[in-house]
Length: 442
Ligand SMILES: Nc1ncnc2c1ncn2[C@@H]1O[C@H](COP(=O)(O)OP(=O)(O)OP(=O)(O)O)[C@@H](O)[C@H]1O
Ligand SMILES: [Mg+2]
Image (cartoon, rainbow, N blue to C red; front, side, top):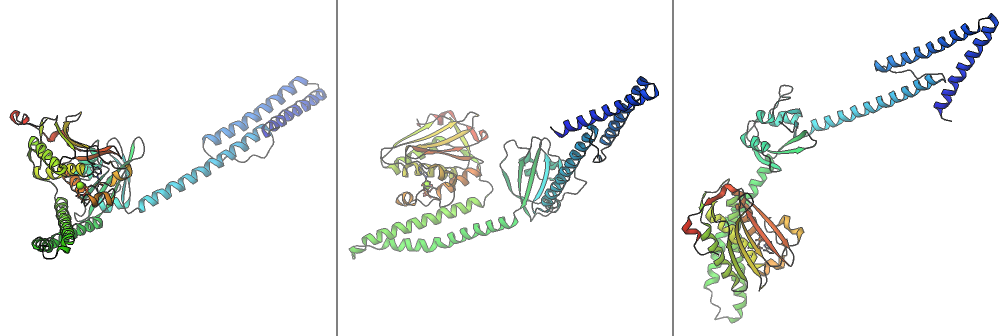
């Protein structure tokens, strides 16, 4: 039998005993029914009074005493007392946890702001937000982040529906020499976390690295030109056994010169925020790419060019040519004899121009795809070395495309081939002169 049933039985026994005593007293004094009625009313009043007391305690949220008796109301009181204690302990535990989390978040070196997702109003921020962004507590609570951090780049990034994951290298509104990175992380339906990190040291290191690479490449250029020049004038006729050695030395010196040139190109691209914008004649560009592909292929591949976009591009002709040309040379290099290479210029669903270079070559295993545009990254050293690659071409292409706010997409299957697509914004499409569009590209 459960405790509740026992308590119920106990209460019934007490009531039965009370009525029995009332009956005896009633018989003794000759007033049976009035005595029983008075006893019943007294018992009911006692129960109602105790229930009222419990209800008042519950409503006023005061602690309910444990309850000593064994009746049904005592049992109810004990259960309520236990539940109340449990819920108080749970609440205290939660408050302690919340306080610990807040203290931890407040101690974070990164500025952390809780904001509403709808209109980016500040719900909470830590001490680092005061240091890095100049926020003031309580003045700035409930205000809009975009109004407080008065930097157009940040406002545009926060309000953009397809914003990039992080916004890098933003000067702090408190001290412009401090560089910040912004990250917005939604964590519930209506709230998000804005994390702002001090990346001054990182940016400084990055600058040192860029300068170092640029300086070393620059310094290496002259000695390499000299070595290259001397190697070119040496005639191996007098010493025929030198022929193979000289040939290898010339090949390696050409390779080193190419690496140095590519590194310099990368450094120059990295140092720029934008490129000169001009109309890029895509008919001429596609014809040039076709000629290059045919020349590199030496008739080993079937090369085709399709111009379905019928527009020109707004961008930097020289840099775009270098990016496209690397994709074409990769397609030729990494496609075995007899394969196909298609160069396609077309418009996407929203009229955004895109140039694709599709080959039926070796393909690239999926695990290499995310790292393909890193400097010196090569899928297989032997594959690239045999074809003379240095692993800088796609890195340069990515930088060029970034400077055009465009992106590079790669789809590839080992053994089946690859498709490299440069996607531009629709705003970069320029109407083409009618005469030019008929100029011979299929
Ligand atoms: N179309 C392709 N098919 C298969 N693998 C490719 C293709 N394009 C690039 N790759 C792989 O990606 C790597 C990086 O290409 P990237 O153009 O950056 O360097 P590279 O061609 O080796 O040298 P270079 O600096 O001369 O261009 C290549 O080494 C190659 O392994
Ligand atoms: Mg390449």
